Image 1 (cartoon, helix red, strand yellow):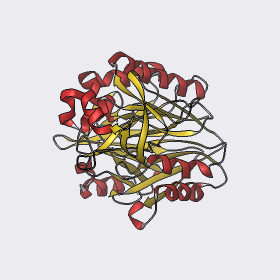
Image 2 (cartoon, rainbow, N blue to C red):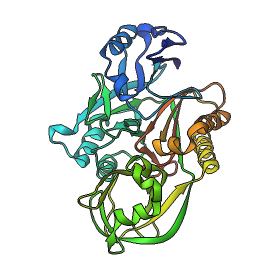
Image 3 (cartoon, rainbow, N blue to C red):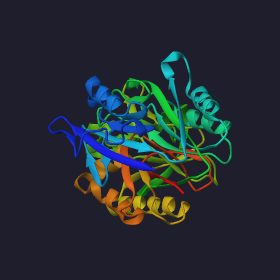
Image 4 (cartoon, rainbow, N blue to C red):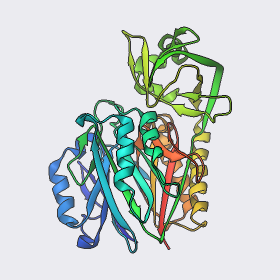
Length: 379
């Protein structure tokens, strides 16, 4: 596998070099950037000209990862020439009347061909119902095929997210690629680093991913009480105080972050379903544990490919982690580097949700507040 990488900023243009070193040999170009930058058509024309035979695949972000640096309002481009891996992709537009569950089903059916070993998904970040999408995605997924990825983002604006496969970036799009090979080794891991506080509370009124009441009281009012002064910054500040939810006694809790609030309805919209009868707890971030979580995810992905440095690592971390870590944000990426070694090329982005199984071979889930890592190597 041959890889070259560069970034673009409004201030300095391309760095460290202009795209095009791999030229026509590149098969896939990963592109992660801010929403305004992705709308610059001239940049896309430059990338396509530099890699005329490559598929373009990417999404909008809340921060871009280039090696161990984290950028804002930039574009990170990673061109890949595989030795023994084929790439196919699919683009699904939700505004075409396709629901979240159907989108997940259709995605898998279109990619399920002989040789498929892994799927990377870049999902719409604001309007999709993550639970329904994951249910559709996993319903027909062959047991030997793993899925990772994330939800596109829009900084702290929460207005418009973009994704694309061989097209210009568009809103309300889910894009995905299938990797087909008998030599590709894939590793993945996903961990958080949050502390829970307060009692468990019962969801007494909800509809799909919209939460109305906890313990028979307004969920939004209760949530604002816990947030205190941070309540003025909702929905962005909600990332600092997510909820953990367990749908049954023995279920492993998953973390859910607020996407939107409705003052008139006294409701909170989350990335996935918040079913009545489930239990939730409030959570808050711990800076050191966030970094430790990223390192733990790296170790899991590293061990999955035989404890050797991969060719490529795709990092998808939650915007909420970025808001908490602030100036320490690069510490989590540096921690991953210490585990995966200097050989691996790093790319990725900060998201509105991360897609990964809890454990190797487990069911794929949608997460919030995690660092999710996908490692790729051709043996």
